[in-house]
Length: 135
Figure 1 (cartoon, one colour):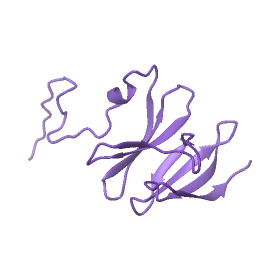
Figure 2 (cartoon, rainbow, N blue to C red):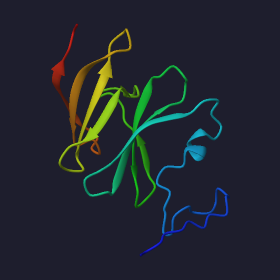
Figure 3 (spheres, rainbow, N blue to C red):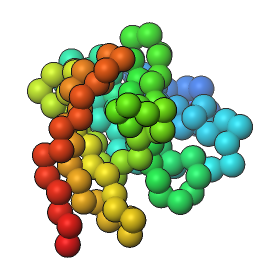
Figure 4 (cartoon, one colour):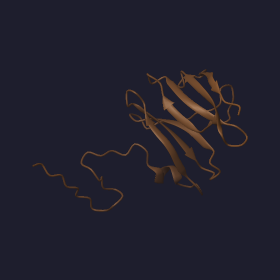
């Protein structure tokens, strides 16, 4: 029978599994921040990008970021037509690397709107409201 063993030296620099790669280092994200909590992390269909939610304030308001795994470039997504960071509750990729789905929260901090974002990499992405739950 095949056996599998893990030889990890316990250091943060050492990979736990052979060939393991770090896609999102929470310690690096938290550097110079008083608070950092990573929520959902989702790889894109091509596995070229990861979309992730991160809260830097502690008030459970998560920003949506996308990281290019090949270049390391990290983009904080903003509201369409604004410089305000996009605050989300959930995120998911569509069938391609150009489409993201996300939810926003109401004033009571409950998820209530589902959006589709097309062309998130462009200077003019488009958001389409797909569902709104008012009660």
